[in-house]
Amino acid sequence: MLTYRNNKREFEASASTVAILPVGAVEQHGSHLPVGTDAMIAQAFADRIGTILDAYVLPVLSIASSIEHRESKGTVYLKAETLGLVIRDIIESLHYSGYRKVILLNGHGGNWILKPTIRQLIRDFQDKGEPMEIVLIHNSVVVKRQHEVTEHVAHDLHAGEKETSIMMYLHPELVSEYVPQKQATTVPQDYMDYFDVDDITEDGYWGFPEAATPEKGEKLMQLMVECALDYLRELDETREAVRQRKGAT
Ligand SMILES: [Zn+2]
Image (cartoon, rainbow, N blue to C red; front, side, top):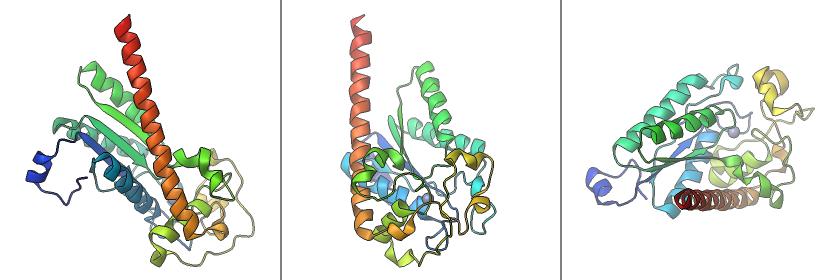
């Protein structure tokens, strides 16, 4: 695995053409978690996948799309369109220097612009006849197996059982006592289009931090890695099937 700590000679000696870009957020996560929670989780996720795939793991793109948390001091964000352009520039520069597969590991649900950005960019590379695989994996890839570890899956979206558990495992020194909220937030997630998180929560979290433990955090990280590798393998199998089918006609 290579990172930005490696030098020119080490990059030239590496045969890997796979890069991983973790994308996080800098936004309030209640009184109990640091504003860099999503960035820290995305980086840890990327480091684990990068070790397995022997990839170039980029430093996490920390400041991303967090407009829904803008009322909270400490939150910093790019406009969604700006984030899309930043992602495009990063992937194009990786392609220029020889990378042929880029995996975006997204640690923040508000970074929805990643999806249309890569959907367009993949076609743009195809249309230029330049081979480039781009894959987008959210840390919510774990959702179908999350019930194996956590009590809550529904309405545990932000600084709840899942994220608090992972932070208790990765960075226990950064986790504080949570502030009990009188009412759980159960509105649909897409209400983030209409409200700021400060409008609909008492202490900025959306979920169940009281159920968090470091043991759950460790298991969740393992599951996230397993689910991401499953996703990559299934995508590769589909690519191969498509290639064979098109080659056969
Ligand atoms: Zn988060």
